[in-house]
Image (tube, rainbow, N blue to C red; front, top):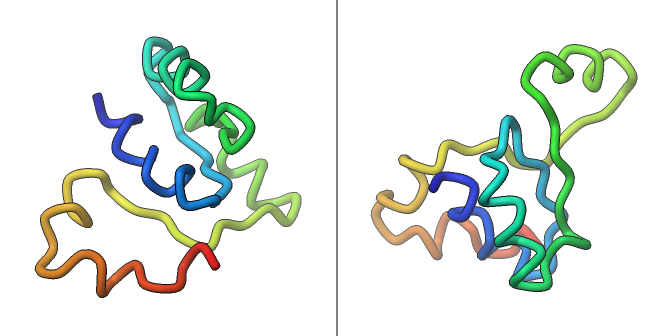
Length: 80
């Protein structure tokens, strides 16, 4: 379930926005008591979010970053 790959960012204290998250994943975020770090966005809302000045520090694909060589080196300091 792709939405769960971002739990680590929330556990590190980051605010996380998920696009088109699976409803079951949303339930699991709250079950893990990380819902306060979660914002849900529908893919058709992204253009509006950007047009109104919303931006994100990191956009990632769940299938790429975890498989990168030494992923801890890539993420060092992002959530501090």
